[in-house]
Amino acid sequence: MRGLPLHLHLAVCLAGVLAFTVQPHDGQGPTESYDPEWSRQLEGYGRTWMYFPDGKGVPRVALLSSDERSTPSVPSEVGPDDVTFYLYTRGQELSEVIDVDDPSTLWQSSFDPKRPTRFVTHGWKSSSDADVVQLIKSAYLEVEDCNVIGVDWSALASSNFYPWAKSYTNPVGRQATPLSPRVSDLIKMMVGEEKWGATGSRRKKKKKVVGADKGRAKLSDIHLLGHSLGAHLMGYAGSHLRPYKVARITGMDPAMPLFEILPSSDGHLDASDAEFVDVIHTCAGALGFLDNIGHADFYPNGGTPVQPGCCCAAELAEACSHGRSYQFYAESIRSKDFVGLACDNWEAFQNGSCAGGTTAVMGEHTPPKTRGVFYLNTMRSAPFALGERGVRAAYHDDYDY
Image (tube, rainbow, N blue to C red; front, top):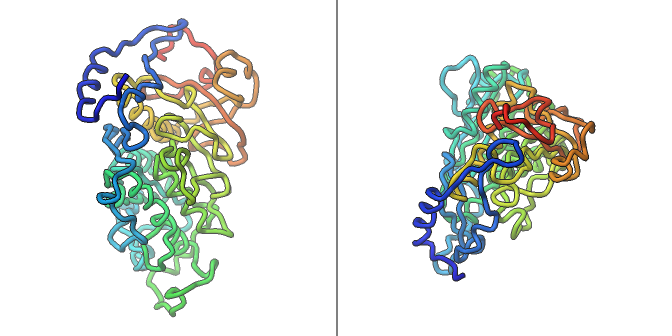
């Protein structure tokens, strides 16, 4: 069949929504009909363009390539207005802006170096106002007195030309220009830059900052979390802190395009970027990484689309599945009921071959010594966690799966 031109695909989308059916399977409740080969009929899909969800989970056309005359140049550095750090604490009703170039904005804020600090960031065509940051921020502040920092790089992540947005993840995480606003710079400011040794303009004697006598944060109290492209951004930030490491990086469905497929020399989030790296895969092989890349990798519902409760046209189902990763994580902050079972693959999990094996909690409460690949089932809607039922291979009809 000849591939459909992009401008005709809206009709295909509408037809997909109207034709979509939900059918029972094996007595385990409803499942969504989904053909993983759906995109083969679309001309150039996966080579020159693809659907990728924005911060609201709406599928948008992401251009993967272009002719040389219209391809935008990739920037060499990040400017001072391209990234904003928003500090959220229990003591402040509104967020406070932290300027990496002005230490006083950190030390005179409500930031407390004695508390745990969580950095959270978004992915393509998103911002710190999106659910990925706001849901996780609110959950953390509800359960503990901590510092939550939303990393907003929306000005850089907004390009329709996906390779351009992807190229920014490295500069935002660890741009070599001394004055660029980056995650690693802010972490060094919190911990004490002398730990790494000042270079370049950092060697200049700095004036004493009011409030800096609060003390210094500990790397063991710092946790970086990122969704999609943001997962790799946090990986770059972590790698730039070598020879030291933050305590933890959590990748929520790390983006696949131009990382796992057609990768660049920049690499991607992996287990070397922090003392503990955990990954939640929910749209693996479509929008997210398929391979296990952390110390502990969790594949709820097999880790691939379609996640339970996601439906309709294939690109909508994939977008929904991609977002499930941060929804699961946000819920896990208040719950220890996402229980995964160590298993070699989803098929072995489903046929019960791994029953009675090692289990681990997915999400916020994953023990840092956890190692391996884990599978679990979830509910179709929040609350998603099933507790010990989640590691059973089969369910009865009385479970709303």
